[in-house]
Image 1 (cartoon, rainbow, N blue to C red):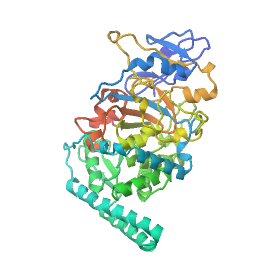
Image 2: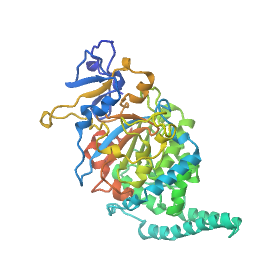
Image 3: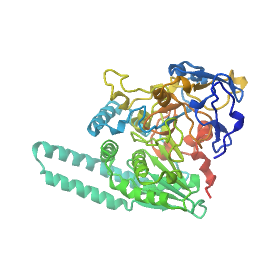
Image 4: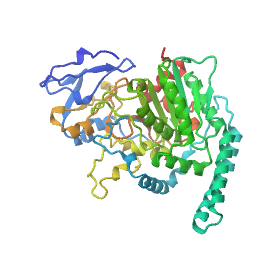
Length: 496
């Protein structure tokens, strides 16, 4: 970490400082907008600085105009940061009644079933790396989906009319689960090659989503190895068919059920975190894998010292989780746990809206207790379609605009001397130490990390819709500028 840049320590009326830290990309960004220049420091790096003390000023500011609504058929990416202050100043949605959470989720899913076809659209598949799943994975789902539905119907009729006997229905369920687990093999498997880098100093893990069997998880691990040139440990989240997989998702995230996949995978991840030879631990989760990753993070925060967590990086794609714990050491967002946390999502991805896009608040749109008189303690904890994504939130590309593109938008900062403690928690705009790119908008909430949202894009499949060579979200210019994950592509940025 670089020392503070004294060239940015401008004098101000209250003798406050405005520091900057290295962010790993050569650019330098403010450590915290709550420490922004006071009147007397009208410029920063040649850009105008406007001090505001009212939260509504953000939505009314010129920062909103930095991006217009995207044109039809285009897929621009927007980004913002979410600061988890450990529950100070915001809701802890996932700590509510588990049965109420489950009920809300079921109602949300029922009201958005029209989005299901977009899970697999547009069609396409990544054929750039060898795949072993193919017909076998499809056949497995064709078999398991009807069996899981039949077993569910049997359970319901057993509970209502006693036919078949409950002991028989339970026995059939346990037998099905046992056969499915045995058929899919071990929980972890390693994908590597002679060209792998960081074999002794880094540990990389991937955990898959729903409807993915062992061969499908290995396919993704092969693709990730091709992308990053690191050994990839695939932690298998076993599939029991779409219906049972969805039920398992809700039990994991709403009832906090630690399934065998979570428990066994955590042992492997924790062992790597505690290994002093490992200088970087990277965890990548997709879909339901985001729920499992969230559970691992909660466990690591309890079981592992903070200095060891500073080597851990987490990246999720279309996460189905309802929270991601990354509590800050300070209320203004400084001293974040985990080295880097990033979440990637397509706007029209049903699972992403059910998870990360429903629970990672948008900048300027926070709801506090008492804001909604109809449901003051619950409304913010309901998944919501990200209607603010097209410009109602203060999107920013974090970069400099050229004079040819028009006047530069001012940096929006807050005068901490004019804000209450609650306002500092909810309205401050910290920039996390070590993150790449310029200053992005910030929101306070349970889903800590940097969020990358690709507008107008549908599709949930990891290989086809998130990392396909022709349409990978990692290839977007905004992501290339602001994401830490992209610095590892092609075997670069190895931790020695």
